[in-house]
Image 1 (tube, rainbow, N blue to C red):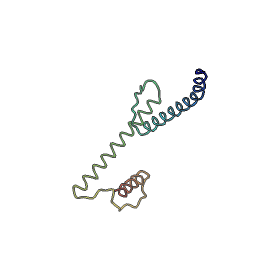
Image 2: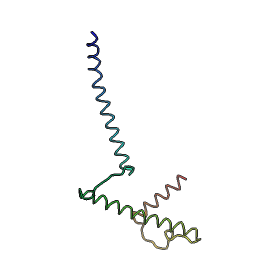
Image 3: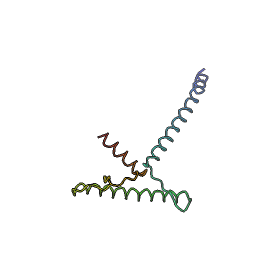
Image 4: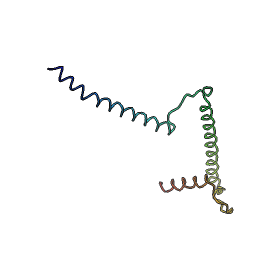
Length: 116
């Protein structure tokens, strides 16, 4: 009589355990993807193995050079205010339309001012 009770319990609980295992796997995969997109997971890629790794390293190098140029621009703007001179980006003498990058930077600055 005891074996029939255990058999019925296992029969009912194993599908539940399988579904819980699948749910846990999906959640772990989603967490990995989110952390990878945010750049919090470092990958050890061998550039000799695939061309995708080479293109990834090139894109990272481009992103690093962009961030370096942006940080130098920010330093120049910060020192301009310390010197008592106004930065050039506030010069309204030219009537050309803003580029996409300039519009994006302006939206970010406006968002920071609204948050503060």
